[in-house]
Amino acid sequence: MTDPQPEPPVEVDSDALRSILRHQASTVTVVTAPGASPAGFTATSFTSVSLAPPVVSFCLNLVSSSWPTVARARHVAVHLLARDQQELARTFATSGVDRFAAPTRWRPGPEGVPILDGTLAWLLCRVVDRVVVGDHAIVLAEPELLRHARAGSPLLYHRGGYAALRAEAEPRPAAA
Image (tube, rainbow, N blue to C red; front, side):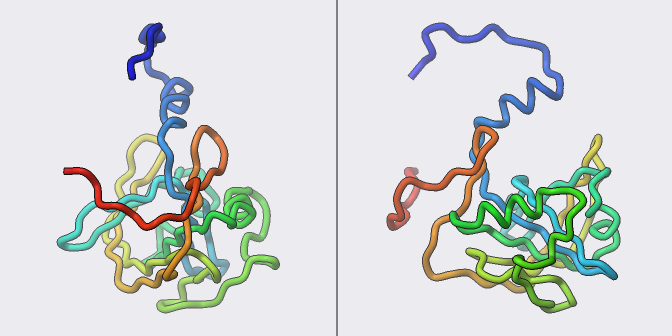
């Protein structure tokens, strides 16, 4: 369907780009990394890069309090949040709080990486590269272990807020 009165084009700046990107629904993830004080943050930039070999990526602002720990980490965990985990997403998106304090439930996992309890899925990944672009770093990582729930629906981020799929249904194959 075509918009009968499209908006005129505008020059791209960070506000205009942010506005456009709000139209893209993204799975909400929490990335955790081990350290003297474990680090973790909410990210909607998680994506698959390659299947052979398996490589995933996520982005992190260079001024984030988590960046120094992630910059040194050999391993990280990426947790895909379930539709009812908005509060966990908010906790890991909030600056200046102990994100791992109660009520957050977690345990040290392989390689000492914090593993959050009750998430839809998690991947333990070995960091293979960090690429600084502008004010962010793109972290490339190879999944080594993963665990996922047998059922459940992901938490999504769309238009500046949390959302979920309308109904839990069996996934259908994508059209060719």
